[in-house]
Image (cartoon, rainbow, N blue to C red; front, top):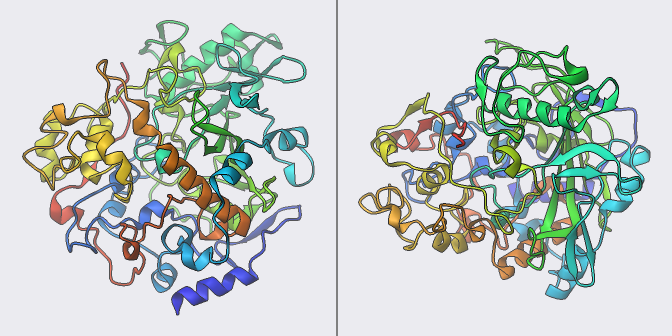
Length: 551
């Protein structure tokens, strides 16, 4: 009955539109009353399937806050307990496209391999770029496409050798710059998410005397990189593209009046984040020409230091895909495909999906996941290729373990050499749901020896010779990140069905097959009987800062 209630709401749902902005009570008129709780939060740690926790992927997001600012909060309790609101407990897991597509995508044909390959090699980005600033594309960012597809092959477009993005008509610098980063644990293309990341600082950070100055801009980008990685004014910032320098108290050039604040981006900082389909024929990066989404953020003001007991404003503003993030220090915009494959602004409910992760959890820095994980120095100023063309991502470990750890993890800490090594062992796989079977052989030479809980005497931590995701030089093999062609096109097919149906309210994160508990996967479905995640009882909880030590 619960599923029928949700399913019947499909008929009543429309994508929204109009202008002028809407401000309403949070969740009012939403089919999913809490779209800000992402699919990952519905993982079964093993407490449902086995009666005890055998995995804990929750710690990477819900942990001791990385910074002392209001953009993050210590939310360790969400590692220990399933704290779902009453409305969610009644309806169950609302992300049905991932766990029960037989309900939400019934009647939507599965495309063939030929249909997928034709579709994903069509360009929907150029039209949105040309028509930005008006109508439904009012807030589409001024970022031109990063790829072209001609003669049956992919090439980079509009990017110079240093990662600067150029205007396709004038060849001038746009201020945007691509960068390469170590993906957040589990958020890999093989798990359905493949992206590019771009940053742009406000105009004064790019200019001196009102004129663009590349060297000033590089220096300010280096200052920001060190700031969000925890380097304080007066300390030495090392291994940047402009060399080593003492962190200043103010930025340079026309931004000399702006104070440097550790763990924060300066006001006016922008991020663009296109998400693609998977195309194994792209030997540069596995990315398609067509984009699934364009995500955008702009910093409004420095955040205050955290304050206790503050009530969150229970209202939600939306205008043509534009919203505030959870902490109200950023504005965000999102564009997603309409049923014909053209980019449209996300509805209020679709945008609410993006809000809480960017400014309401412990595992971010200034509400972001990317730039503080950038490959250090000049090596990081390139299009994200997942080590496919240039190997420079290693399994860097944590800068510190300033939080608290459970007894089982405490035994292992002296042995842990890498961030992914700990994540894979704690989750017993390469995704939050232990549902990606393909990745297991890429993690360990023995697929049954990954978890320190399930194979305590012999696993990838106690026996590093089992590790299969590092090459002889210690770089992460691209095949860890990238799926086989069969899996890649399978994920594309499922996502194309979501686009055709326009039922994004039931989820946009899909694998090549369902992964709910009833389908043999490990995503919760019914929620009214789950309370504790069981990780405390199992001793596998970890409240640690996720900042990385980058040599």
